[in-house]
Length: 294
Image 1 (tube, rainbow, N blue to C red):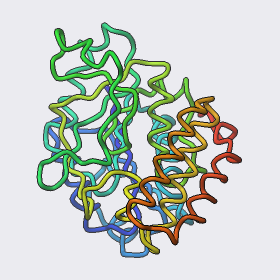
Image 2 (image 1 turned 120 degrees about the vertical axis):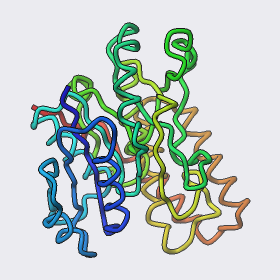
Image 3 (image 1 turned 135 degrees about the vertical axis):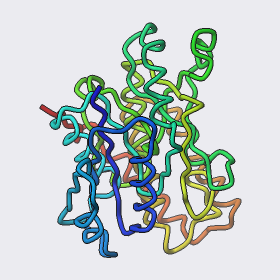
């Protein structure tokens, strides 16, 4: 079985070193590691050029494509290079030594329920609690496989922090939308796959996500002038997802929740920015940008 890892990195060379070392020390070795370097300026290019491993395949982009663009390019390249399974993660994801083995070992048993779309790891923060931004979305039949495969729970949404994609699913649903740039690109993509294939959280596949803080996406307590640009992308992207999937009630709930969180945290000066992002989401039909490989 040919497994290709895809790591997207931007200006986090010290964490990237940990990620690559952890991948290469996994009990099950990957066939290749594609590293998409999003035009980092912190010595990442030099580090990758000097990295001693025949499995490493670095790609140095001319500009920063964001996480969404990086994963789109990396997944497409992995498929072109013969991957049967594509193991995606950020440059601050540190997989335990058995993370990949646990996912691969579950495939034969879960395959009896239908062809798998993807498998996701349990993502912990540095203190071993769950990493809030990477908690998967449960399927209403989440416990359907527990009798046969106790460590697998069916899900409909996951992040790009340790997700093992079936290349057949990638060919069916297309590639991630690079125009999302950052935030909610993985949520949309994982839901797109789970609408066609059963997908699972594998609880004994564990990785650590070394984020500076452990907080939920669009947590307005973390909103400031420096992070505003991310929130604008996140709001636009999620609004677009609800609207262009016909989930208008969900879109209204999303607007209400954001307004409530904004006022609760007394972030009144960002009201116009958030409103602009919501309007942008109404106009941004992300489905026009879905591309297919091959």
